[in-house]
Image (cartoon, rainbow, N blue to C red; front, side):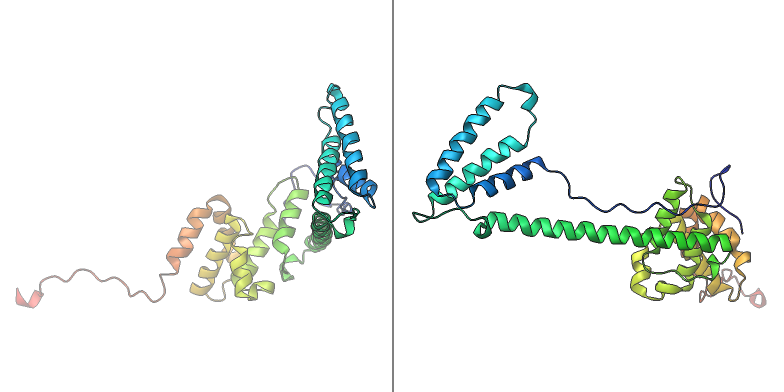
Length: 268
């Protein structure tokens, strides 16, 4: 089977490196707010007011140092002390600060948990894509890719294989997906998956699939090798291939054109 890796490189590819676990982004401002909340827990309004004055003093001192001009943590701490001071000022006398009943804190924790869950989901998806890319590459090396049915998410796997190849188009993978899309194989049996593919696959792949579908309709039983020209046309002129596919949809069922009626020769 023809390989489509960049010229001069080996066709054998090592497995993709392990996907790194997602890390919580470092946010100095958030760290500052957390430090303030830990210190403020259990403080009453008077203690909070005193801490706020200390924070304002440190802010004035920091403003005199140019190397602290870009510090995000200090201003965030001051802003948090001011917020907590206002919170207790509006609370009944004797109230002490408790972050567990602070609506702002709880909303932040909920948002952070959602962000962490999203990062974890992204990691699982990246691992799935990497593993599937390894599998498809092995099938390519064995020459059995054409006998494999695509699965949901293989459009992203195609992009991963192209990325691994340094951006070179993986022509055999594109042809495999186009044929599966045209013949409704694998997850493309579902009309919703075929519709979704329109936004996931490249114009050449979609044009190739559309052209294959129309050619198969017009010439049932045509061998795949006979239609190799469709891949070349779609790769070089995807708009022309799409236009040809659209034109071919009108061929079947259209009565042949007849010449304009002329005078009856008998009546001459």
